[in-house]
Amino acid sequence: MRERDRWNGPLTRTTAITAAMLLASSARATEGLVLEPDFRVTLPLLIVVFLLLIFPVNHLIFRPIFRVLEARKDRIEGNRARAAALSQQAEEVVARYERSLREVREDAEDDRRARLEVVRSETARGTAEVRAGAEREMAGAREEVTAALEQARAGLRAQAEELANEAAGRILGRPLS
Image (cartoon, rainbow, N blue to C red; front, side):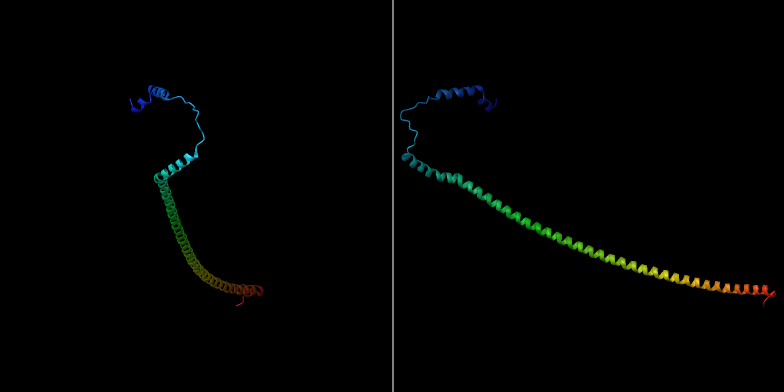
């Protein structure tokens, strides 16, 4: 049986209650019972007790409590100072990050503009080359058309002369030479 269970049994409780009833005495009122304290005796006694207890209570209770409170205050102030320093460092890191992000964006924008300018110049150069080629082809085609036109005109002139001679020969009834 456990030690604790032995002292918590019903027999032990009954024994304790019986002993308390036998040892208790009845309360009796006396004729000289005074309920008002006599301050001439009580006040100096209370002052002496207070003075005797203030130093041990101060040493055993108040000083340790104040030490703990002071240490807690110092810890809190230290934590606040660390938090402020960390906050400042975080702000500096965020500022550096934003600055570098802004620089990267500016560099990317400059690079994009440079590439766009290169593409535009290449497009303009390509367009100019195509235009020049088209103009050369058009000039060649014009020359061919002009030559064909001249050839057709010359052919038409010859045919017109032949037809005119033939028509005149029919009209006159004799061939024209």
